[in-house]
Amino acid sequence: MTYPLRGTVLLAALAFGFSSAAQAQDYVRADCRGQVAPTVLRFDSPEHVRWYKRFWTGDCDHLPFCIPGSPNWNDIVGKLVIRGGPAEQAALLPKACRLGQLIGLEWSRDKKVRRIDTGDLRTFKGMLEKSGDALRGVEQVEVSTRAKLAR
Image (cartoon, one colour):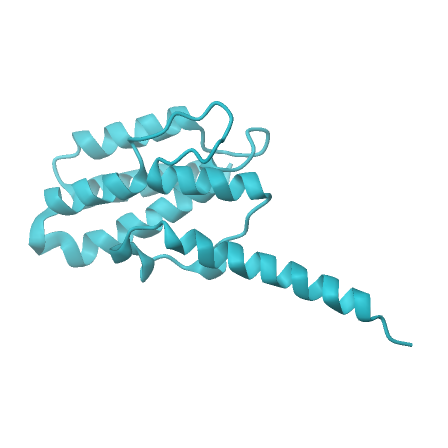
C-alpha cells in the first residue's frame, strides 16, 4: 500500500525547512554569508524567521512591537571590522559573523523560551563599544552569550 499524500507532505515540509535556511542567508551581509552555517538554522515558526531577519537587517517586516533600524548585526559587524582594521579582519570577521548567528537565533525565538533578550543585546553592544580591541570585545561577548545559552 502506498501513501502518495504522505510523500507530498514530507517534501513540502523539507522544502520549507531548506528554503527558510537559504532565505535566512539572503539578508546576512555578503562578507558574512560564507562564515555563517545555514545548516544550523532551525526556526520554531515563520515569526522566528522574521525576527531573525530583524536582528540582522533592522527590517521589521510587520512584526508586532518591533522598532526598525539600528542597531542591527549587519551594521555592528561593519563597525567592528572598521575598528579592528585590516590586521584583525581575517580573525575578526568570521568570529563576529558566527557570533551574530548564535545570538540572533536565540534572541529571535519566542519570549517564553529564549535565553537572550533585548536587554542582553544592549549589554552586548555596550561590551563591544567599550572594548579597546574589537576582537577581544567579540570574544568577551561570545563568552557571555555561551554562558547564557548554557543555562
